[in-house]
Amino acid sequence: MNTMEKSIVRDMSLAPSGHLKIDWVKEHMPVLNRIREQFEKEQPFKGLKVAISLHLEAKTAYLAKVIKAGGADVTITGSNPLSTQDDVAAALVEDGITVFAKYNPNPDEYKEHLIKTLETKPDLIIDDGGDLVTILHSERPDLLAQVRGGCEETTTGVIRNRALEKSGELKFPMIAVNDAYCKYLFDNRYGTGQSVWDGINRTTNLVVAGKTVVVVGYGWCGRGVALRAKGLGAKVIVTEVDGIKAIEAYMDGFEVMPMAEAAKHGDYFVTVTGNRDVIRGEHIEVMKDGAILSNAGHFDVEINKQELEALAVSKRVVRKDIEEYVMKDGRKIYLLAEGRLVNLAAGDGHPAEIMDMTFALQAVSLAYVNEHYKKIGPRVLNVPYELDEKVARLKLEALGLGIDTLTEEQKAYLESWKEE
Ligand SMILES: NC(=O)c1ccc[n+]([C@@H]2O[C@H](COP(=O)([O-])OP(=O)(O)OC[C@H]3O[C@@H](n4cnc5c(N)ncnc54)[C@H](O)[C@@H]3O)[C@@H](O)[C@H]2O)c1
Image (cartoon, rainbow, N blue to C red; front, top):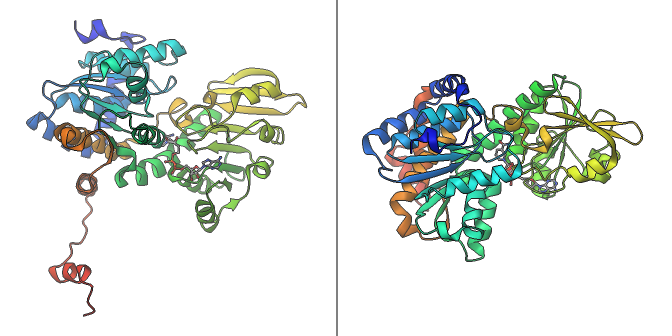
């Protein structure tokens, strides 16, 4: 069967628009272009099957094409029901990649797409949020045997992978791509920082300057979201559960307070904790009329939607990706993108230049795990520093930036314990 016969996508006639989107990001992903050239020559995945679950938009599509250029037979599905772009999915099918993904499938369809992707019996996987790995270990161990290893994209997935490792049940090596410097320092911070505001602004078309933004969680993503909110002219409040992060937010110039207090002040709320129920009914009850709630954490559990719904007397869609909940006292609270990652469900995700580094790391880490899976064994491994550094060097080269090199004397000085 060819990919057209095997795939499940919304509408193949959308492919031309998908090709244009992929061509655009390719122009802005020089590091991945270099890796593609290397893969074309070396064919690291020749004869292997690779299964990918990532937010299926143009940058991801280009990564899938790069892995294919390395000799792999690639199958891809989405990692969130609202982030798949149907035109991009159709274009990938034309490019010889099997796709099981549609925008806004029902929960059963969404799960079926993940399972169909695994039923291709992959040798290698790229996961985002841990769904592929979890299904393999809990529901479909019959598909485990062939898997050599994989790579995980995000904080939440790495946490789930490590929990599996700790329980002694992880069956193959997973590389924590999220934890590489060239990932979280740029993707989580500057990527999420910019794209969250892009998603919120294009969805609401309202002003940010002068308003109060509450950022829930001051991790790598939260730092970026708060920084860019400040740049847009907002007053920023940070809520945290970690004392050190809270002091950092304070010294970065933000107000710090508990959610029970911050809830009264916010015009915009952005949750980025990777945790559940960080905005609950008790907080929604004291919010201002017109408060806008959004989430950028991996799962749609950060804002408790059941409690929001229970407090409301009515609910309606007032604009694409905006639901209005009217409270008993007449206040209106707005929820963006059903509480799913606002930058991907209501936007195009991170800028291409940022994903250039993230996906370069994915590509070289996948080749690494394929080469060393026997030696690594079933554990969660950080991206080796030399791969992280390689991606940084390629990025600097693409940016036309030079840096200095240690002299022999400097190296000796830094390695010595003696005073000279
Ligand atoms: N939207 C995107 O494109 C995108 C990109 C990267 C990561 N993510 C996801 O965003 C989430 C956060 O990732 P990160 O890399 O910033 O993680 P992180 O671990 O660096 O930060 C999370 C922060 O949330 C805080 N936190 C936990 N519970 C809290 C609570 N109840 N109230 C306030 N703060 C709380 C933690 O103390 C921590 O400082 C994860 O789910 C990750 O997978 C999303």
